[in-house]
Image 1: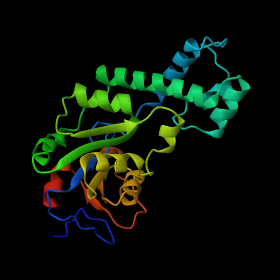
Image 2: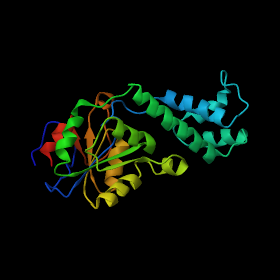
Image 3: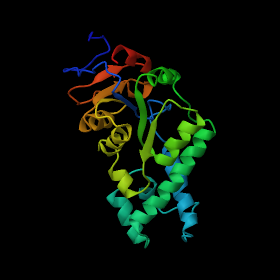
Length: 240
């Protein structure tokens, strides 16, 4: 393998030029433009959940402590705030996430986020490899993106489940990547992401980590020892 100027690894991993390799991709920041879901989505989703549960709260001037319920993460503060309001934390988190997924989908449909131009290469890659999409974003949102943009190259598509269990299984845990490998009947390949958690999840699943540089992660310096680095999805042809 030829060492390229874009490499910033101390121990460059090897990808065998074999068609029996899985090519798995993260969605946000890799396929879909932008680092991730706008936090405003979760704020609006919280209001949706409050209305759904008919909670006696002033939505125009919410309590300062309610900010803990707007976060993507299932935190101790989220649990404590729910308990103070007499809510089951896990149940309310799942409800809030249901509305977050709905809001995120609506935002994409309204044109707030599009695809990166280099995703066209997926059509070529899927002719020789099994191509899959594995994301920390919500499964309903990920499925919508694939259908809405007609991303037919993906033979496996999976976002994380709504709720606490889905949150705990997100990357860097390898759970959903391993689910993809099992579904595809493969045990080796690559995972392309834009964050350190993506690289760690790839390693944890036994895949070669690939970091793609996008405008939002130019300054990222991963602590992962061994990974490949590309500036465009088209550069994958150099390795596979």
